[in-house]
Image (cartoon, rainbow, N blue to C red; front, side, top):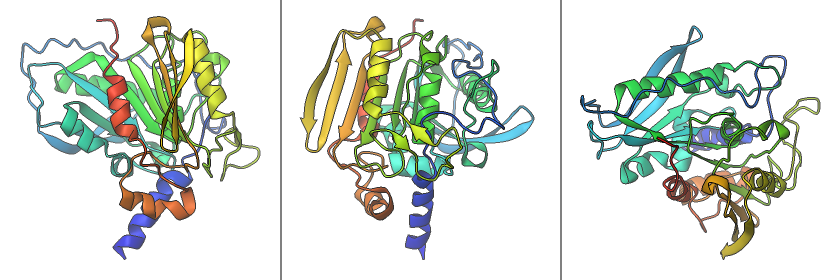
Length: 329
């Protein structure tokens, strides 16, 4: 019975988390370049900010609605030293607990000494901007959560990073389109895009993963599984084109250079404005999965969502990539 419950939970995590553009315009508002302002809480921790080590579930009220997020404080946390922060966003129909289970970001937080925030979307659906000039409930949510964490903990506001899977990956890349940045670098897997609305945003360091046999969000672009034909999320553009779009946006002058890890090919665009590289991992035969997930989880997901590569570990590589970047102080 436990096995069946876990299979169902993991399948829900990725089967419905499949947008590379935007969500239903009848319920959303906002400009893809818009991002709510985060209160600039200073990294001065001369007054220590102690915290409970480990993972807790926190609640914050945003726009009158109680919202939850999981917060992991690593054992190495020092209440007097600014600590980097990673936010990770789950796929559609999923939740923060499943995101942590599939990605292993909680263990990475403990091992590498960064604070981890895993927010929960309302009904498992991130509120992506879709065409007006206002922010959305979820850009507000992200801003409020960061402000709260920065008030409570000793965080480094120059080393805050965004990551996500599937719809959470699309949401992460929309955050990269903001005209002013809260995040120093971005990481995603299983859903990507580049569009002209991002043209006015600053260079964005991006690391991204996608399998060529993704049965949900097609690697070569096209129809997204499970999306109605008249829904704005029903089609996506090719992953390689999207990454090339970001590389052009970042004014990269070298690449893509290639390196192979088993069935996974790394395409790296470098020598970019503000050193904002675009690091793209393409797995031949890979599915709608998170590279490097545990083999147990990979086995549960394979029949419906395809192969999970063990050639690379997306969580480990994201943190290595993030660690190279920080915003101006």
